[in-house]
Amino acid sequence: DAGITQSPRHKVTETGTPVTLRCHQTENHRYMYWYRQDPGHGLRLIHYSYGVKDTDKGEVSDGYSVSRSKTEDFLLTLESATSSQTSVYFCAISEPGGTGGYEQYFGPGTRLTVT
Amino acid sequence: EDQVTQSPEALRLQEGESSSLNCSYTVSGLRGLFWYRQDPGKGPEFLFTLYSAGEEKEKERLKATLTKKESFLHITAPKPEDSATYLCAVQAGGGSYIPTFGRGTSLIVHP
Image 1 (tube, rainbow over the protein chains, first blue to last red):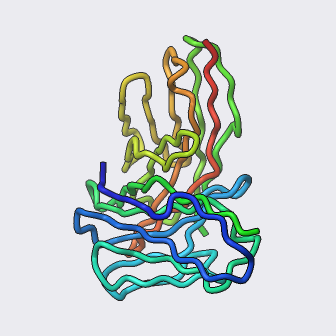
Image 2: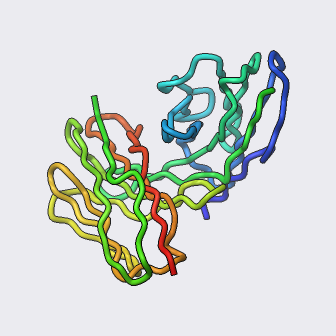
Image 3: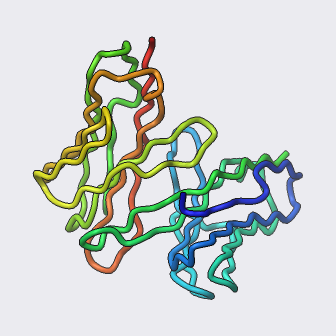
């Protein structure tokens, strides 16, 4: 257990409203990630962070922003939610394994529905 | 561009019927290949990391192997509780720590 929690776990929102998802970790991990998972696409990286206030874009970052003001919290914001952002969102942290491989540990996920 | 292809997409087995899942990859300098298990409604759970060709790792009924082009996840005498989606990911060498995931193999084991 890597001590990762996500909130909320489920959310239904309307098109055009802002939404913020929170990822919280308790073990001081440096690297944090946000993914979305959709049928037929697998896991796709939205944004990631390599330290406080250090973030970068993943492959599907359009329409999303992130912030990391504290080591333990990584926030994902949908500024104006669209139906195409209906998905399951996973937060992950990574730890360096042997010879530099970064194995990831995932949170329980947030199911977001945009109506 | 790093690529990961998993096959088959779905696999149905009878309890006790051993089989293998495949993960083919292309990557510029492999730093690590990872296997994860994902149960419905949950986040992926880390299983193994393999670093170099010829390496093998085992956990209960699962054994992961690695060659220069692919990895296999062998499932010996599976039980219904092994039913899950199995994900493979690779991490390239250099300064990157971002993995590339495959789309997974959905395994169902019937009693």
